[in-house]
Image (cartoon, rainbow, N blue to C red; front, top):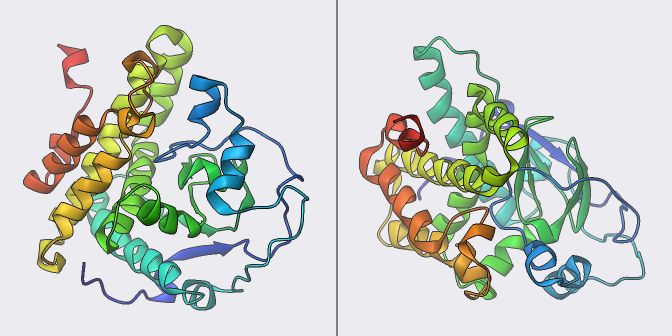
Length: 286
């Protein structure tokens, strides 16, 4: 996508890169709303998520310091590297797209904060770990990103192209929309009330975030370049639960949706450009 360069005054950015937080030094609950969680291997197959983290990022288990340096303000942090700038450009575009829609509906709107970190960081939802992939934390309205994930997305998951990366940010932003609308709280309450449907509700929440990502792109259709849509749909396919687990996980264990479902809902958002078309819970109310 041909996105405008970000305005540092229009986005909220926090940078934990270079803070010295190490692999062995933190605990806490995992974050919320991750687009892809490598630690799923632990729950489904009994694999050690920390070994997955080391494999993905080439991290050492000796607790050594993180070498990546960040910035002290939005302008510096967003220009650390090309991936950082892309992420900030996408964040700025998402703010410009969603804020007016909330204003039209007379709903209070707060812009989220993009938190950069390297390998490990801290969030309002607990420890941020690269193995979790990018995630949204409703507790502090933050999108958490280790930009090394983009290399993994390309080289290991086969999801190539800028639009695949934009889709990642737009999906996490979708969780922010859900949080502002109160939907996230409703779903968490229902999951606690009836744990047997927890995974199904999680899948519906994730698919709606995919659809919202498509809506954002559709509302900026004049910025879409040839190959972008194919890149996004391929990314959605590659991070489907069935693809990530190589078909070894039962559908009942899915938390984000199958490849087909993720592509379907991203495409619905792209085709309609209408956030009202993203009601993945509609059939539950009939």
